[in-house]
Length: 201
Length: 390
Ligand SMILES: [Zn+2]
Figure 1 (cartoon, rainbow over the protein chains, first blue to last red):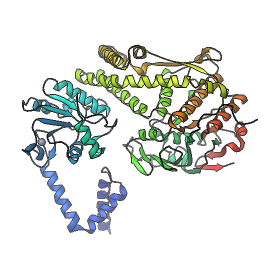
Figure 2: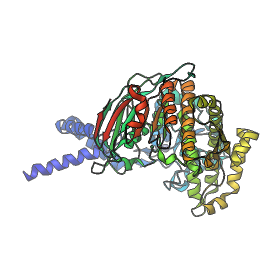
Figure 3: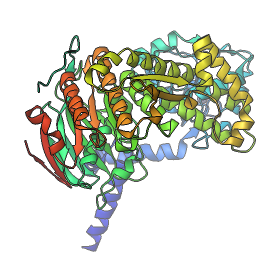
Figure 4: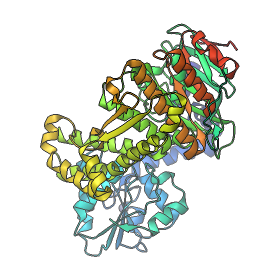
């Protein structure tokens, strides 16, 4: 009796962990856990393997700040990608959104967030020093600032444009990106257009 | 007495109205559900019974703090789980299915401060999305002395009107405010980063010109509708919006004004750090009104005349919205009859009916609303309980 109550508590804990993830609620978490415990071989074990691998091998790419299990990351290591153009984004989700849109063939720089004095996030908390380092590379021609159209994203873009002036051509995504929007929420077509119609900062 | 005005809006827009309102754990109401038609809604009952809370619940179908200016968390019922939900069916929204289900909810988890927003069964990113769907205007007893005190509250009232007409005004005002607060935070900290300050001041300047322009054009539009206000029997007003930034904007245009503001902000950093506020910008504008029938500043008019002036502005705004957005707004009037004599009350009722608005009004007794008769629907409200009276 005590043992089954203990097991119940473990399952409840898993449900609450899943329910706390973005996009999931208690109901979908319960369904996911039910699925995992009834399909141990096809679902539970591969998930454990994938999570363990992610946990032990996940690294931040020293060049661009992206998260990958390779160092340097898949994109930095890809010789077909242009080293002449760099796209600066806030988060991995923004990088994924741009990759989904298949409109960009250069490399990325992931800041890890945006400047926000209210949350105490300053320049030293973001991957800005490594960006300035990369900007010194003479091969680099253009830097696209693709931070979000929020106050913090735009403030960060302005800050970076100031720091990067004289180093490379600095551009930003075309307007048409709605105010307050985050790249990850935009459809691929809109994002590709915003990228194509980018303007000098 | 006939319930009509000689004035009739040229093409009367479809009124916006709520057909259903549901509350969960909101203020004194554990669970409450009511159904309405499109006539004005009169809520009567004892004080503390939760009449104003119903208006507040509706006011959360707009971005920001609601009609009590309370944080979302404060609206949670004592003894509840800490969260709340408000849902409604909206009729008459242009280019939307009717009825359109709306929902806004605060999760019980105290670490979550943002309200959830649902429109037409789909999640929206923030309550700003409500601004695209419906226009809400309100007045409360705390605004009775609006013209006599609190320049900030007056500006907030003006911005609320502007946001109801121009949905991006609210987002712009929020962006400006956020940049301003961050600048202040940096200024009051140790060794502020100059480039970061530049970037924030640039954000402020960029939003400022459009903010001030939208306010100014709203006041012009309202001024042009004073003939209608006179016809309703409410006092007409002349408005002014003054400030250093507004002066430059009017004289030199938006681009020059933005540059000017950036320069001023840069030069006043030390002063602003000391004052603990930004000493220049559209947030410092002084909005005031002159009570035209007496020719005196609104601040010097009697309480009754100030209230009437406010209601007149609201009626003009409702008319304007009907013309511009092809939708009559929802009006929430909390204890609005208090300072009005019988003549003014009837003038208000006639104007509401002429404009075809679903106005939500509260009052302890039903008697002062008797003039409306079958032109309105009456409810009696107590905590967690609502009863249709007629
Ligand atoms: Zn990389």
